[in-house]
Length: 143
Image (cartoon, rainbow, N blue to C red):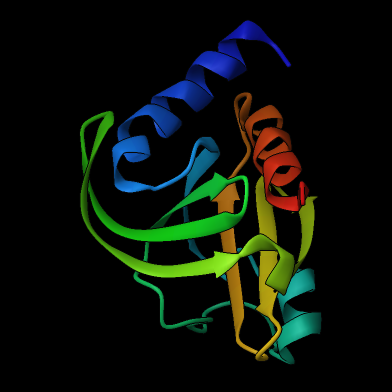
């Protein structure tokens, strides 16, 4: 990974670290999937693609990836910084399945819990964002 991408990831990880009880290796802001008519989301969720709310998470949501857990936060963007409102979900990494794809300038991914809950999310990958996405997905899949 490039030094630029590592610095960009640090700008996401550093502010959320105090809100988590383990070391965070990656973080990203994302929205409910579907706005780009993702084929992955359509296939996995049985939707016609696009437009539907895909979870009960806030939109947008801030995800942080630790060694053992995935944290989801309600947040408010403050310029290039973040104000975290509350933790809204936490999943053990070994209790979820992850599927993702890069398509049409977006990274779309689906988190499925062992209890059957599904969270379909996306974030843009334009202008160097794909490398950040790869860093995020690598941390997300490390168990």
